[in-house]
Length: 235
Image 1 (cartoon, one colour):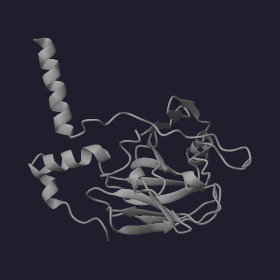
Image 2 (cartoon, one colour):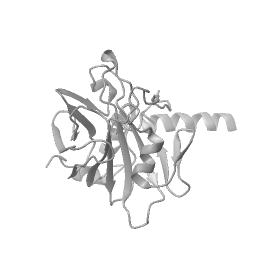
Image 3 (cartoon, rainbow, N blue to C red):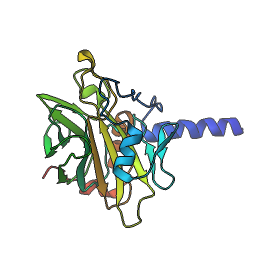
């Protein structure tokens, strides 16, 4: 009887989420090639941005007070967080770096990064609501946070939730981009463009691509009344 109850609950969970086959997974972050000695690894970049010496524990990093928690790569494709600001933190690439946001058809530029290394700059405001994806463009090539959008079909974004900052700081996420194409020898060390996005509102969970349609179906049934107030996020 207990076994039947557990099976029923498991089935209900899958049906409710609308994700029948979503699996936890993390895109591999390769070491920075030796031919680029001036580039920083992810652990170094966390130190560049938040100070201290970060060590890795599994997929996560910490300096003892600030922790960067890796977001499952099935869950950082489509987003619903109400982020309000974006800022370039690091650029280790000779390519131009333009950060943007898209609703799947229209791509809006948030900022074009300037400078290189930890001297990179660039920022902009965000007006994000509903479901959207991040974009990175340069030299005629655009990649989004949804791998199937990309010309090589590869994941070009890994992301981390940042915790342990001063309580006055809003919700913070760090986005690491790879600008190389797999068919043209991209190294996939994910340090070409690093963007910090912040939000002052409570955390909303990013919708995985497999789950978004099921969740939208629930919303339409009234699971969240606020769906009636969803509006086009592009300013």
